[in-house]
Structures are given as C-alpha cells and as structure tokens.
Image (cartoon, rainbow, N blue to C red):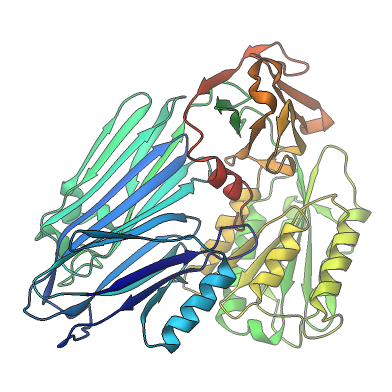
Length: 563
C-alpha cells in the first residue's frame, strides 16, 4: 500500500480561523471498503491516550489513538477528534506498518487549495471545522491493510486565557467506541503556586467521577481519568459508542506581587500581569441594541432578559445609556445617567418595551453611542461601548470598510468597543474587525436556550475595570507582542512576550504604567524591585523556564479574537 500524507494548516492569528487540511493519497488495495465509523465494529480502537502538560498557563496536549483492522480485507479507518478553538495544531503523524508519515505546516490559502484538489481527485481528505462554542473538529482517514494497525498522533498547544479569575483546560473525548485502554493524564506546574483546582464537565459526573483521581501540591497538580469500558457508557451523553463529553480542569495561581510574573529563558521573556488588590473604577457604559426585524422572536426575548439582569448589576457610581436601532436610532435618554434606583427602574421599563422592526443601521447606532460617551466625560472613570446585533448593515451606510473607518475615527482610541454577534448568520468577521480596531473584542452569542446567560457572562468579564490606559514598557526588549491596553478588568490577565535585546538580563527592565481609580497614576517597575507609586517598594517574582519551545505560540495567542 502506498500512502502520501500532507497535513496543511495555517498559522493562527487574531484575525482568522485556523484551517487545517489533511490530504491522503492512497492506492487502495483490492477489496477496499468504506465504513460509517459510528456504526463500524470491524475495526477496534484498542488504545486512546490523552496526555496534557501545563506549564505557566501554556498547555501542550498529545492525543494518541491506536486502531486495529480486525477483518481480512483492507478498509478505511477514521481519526476524528475535537480540540479547543484557540488551540494551535503543532504536529500530526500516522504510523502504518512501521512507517511514520509526518504532517507539513502550510499557510491557509495553500492548505485550502490542496484540500480542494484532493477532493476533486477522489482522494480521502479532512478539514477542521467549527462544531460549537468551544471546539473545532479534525477528521481524516486512511486505508489500512487487512489485519493491520495504524497509530494516529495529534499534538496541539494553547495559551490558557484567564476569565473571571480562573483558567480552564478543556479536553474533549469521543473515541466513537468504548476503549479497553483509555487514559487522560494532566500535569500542571505553576511556579507561583496553585491557588485552587477543580474538575468539571460531563465526564466528571455520575459513575465517571469514580474514574478520576486528583493530586494537588503547592505548585503542581496531577489529574488522571481512567474509566473502564463499562464506565465509558455511563454519562449523560455517553452510550453504546462510548465516551462523548468534556473534562474541564479549572484552576488559578497565587499572585504574590502586583507586578505579576516575569519569566525569561534563552533571550526571551513572558510577562503575566493580573493585579487584583485594586479598587474598581466606575464605568460609563452604553448598550447599543439591534431591534431590527431579524431579531424577531426568541432573540429579542433573550436580549431583553439579559439586559434587565445586567442593569440590576450596575453599581451606583456607574453611569449608563441605552440605544436601540433599526432603520433609525433611538436613545432612552440623550445623556448618561447614574445607576441609581430611580433611573434603573425607568431603564428596565424601557428595556421591556424594546420590539423588533425594520432594517439595520449599524453605522448610525455606533456613532450615536460614541457621541454619547464623548458628551459625558467623567474624570476617574472607564468608558466602554457594547454593541449587540444579529445581522449586516442594510440601511444607511452599508459599505463595511467605510463603517470601520467612521467608527475608528469617532472613537479615536478613547475607549473600547465590544461587538456581540447573535446567531450563526451574523457577519462576525465584520464585527470582530470593528472591535479589534477599537481596543475591544468580538464574541459570538449562540442562539441557544442559554443565550441570555451568554450575554450576562460576557458582561461580567468587563463589569469591573481596575486600570485604564495600561502601558507595558520594556527597556531592553524587542519583537514585543501587544503592549498597550485600554482597560484591565478584574479576573482577567495581560500577557506580553518578546525578546531580550542582546540576551542581557542585567539591562532589561519591565514597567507597567496605568491609571487607577480617581486618576491615580500607578507605576510598576521590575528590576528585582517593583515600585508602586505612591506605595512602598515590594519584591517582584521572577524565574527562569524553558521558553524556547513556546515562544512563537505565545506571540500568536497574546492577542485574542475572542475575549
């Protein structure tokens, strides 16, 4: 049997979804047959191992699946896994009859072209595609000779993002049949110390919980999940086809200094900055709500429900405004108002009577929200715009590039714009670009029963600003990732990486300059001492680690598409 394997995938950036293509050119033996892998029992996954190692919030996960063709003729065998959306596939290989075939990294356009050509020639092919909120699906297949075996090995890497005070490592398991030798092993090593460790997800409930062992030391943790074949059919989404669900490891680290962690190795550094001992900054927030005809029904109901709950969560020293739009723009009040009881009750009454109608003028709505914030500057506060829409602009200015230009000029880097795209039909690329150009992020809201909770969850992430105008300054640093951030929110984290000029740690200094509550200017300086003006010097945390193997992926993931 002759097999040519080419694995093509793009470099992940903040502006595009990663596409991965596997092209298999197989000279199929006589008697070859294709099977539905979900129904097939003529091949046996006799071993399925997932090994994940997390060091300094950086995870490397290896999935190894060993499959045997149990019949006396060749057949097509599929490898089918799901990985986190923000993961970067760094390696894929197959071993057949003692011969290993390695993948080749290629750019997005070339990968797509090779995939199209493979399909047109009738070759086996696979592609990564989005399969929900948190996962992408990788599938490929290969013809295996009679009574032979194949080993698939996929390696993916990701920088874990801190949200609401915690990191989450998600591992999805769906081998498509019960497996005699099934193992998930997770090792976490965090030099500052592990503050807490929890395990959740569908694979941690009911009978499967008995298959989990957890060990937690000061700076290390081990999680093992070894379910028997019988246990693999005993979860809510499991059945005859075995496991189908997520194992989620949730944790956070101790934070010993306001400066955070600064780590260096072999001329490179990475800086994790997540102060938590700061007072919150009052917000000026404008909610811009699409009420066009496409928001009819459940979307509008869920939007009203979420908005009512978000209004309740506003602090008394916050100021807020409400804008609705279709073919025209309407404001609840022309000015921002304080979030006192009287104003909140009036705003909730307004929110209850938002009804869908008409076309979609996104340009006019965002410009009105920007003008409202500009008319109401408040010293010592943090301003932000939150846009919720489910469609393309269909009236007013409809040229997408012109809208981007108008919004960017109006905001002028003064505050962030967060764009929430409702449903799968929304032009999310347009919204995401508009958000990224204005120091914000895009987030897709899935049209499910919990859409209101998704909206509330996003708001919670930006509800408590602690710093504004954050500047990360590195004297003696080069090739830096993003260093300026309009706002820093409680429970999140800023990550910057780069190169130390001339590999000279003695001349390298890191300084964080930011504005805190009441416009107090804070300066965090690292050169073995952190100076927090006007407070006393405190010791910094610094350590060495092997950064060489991760430096490129740190750079790719330092700016996220999704917040």
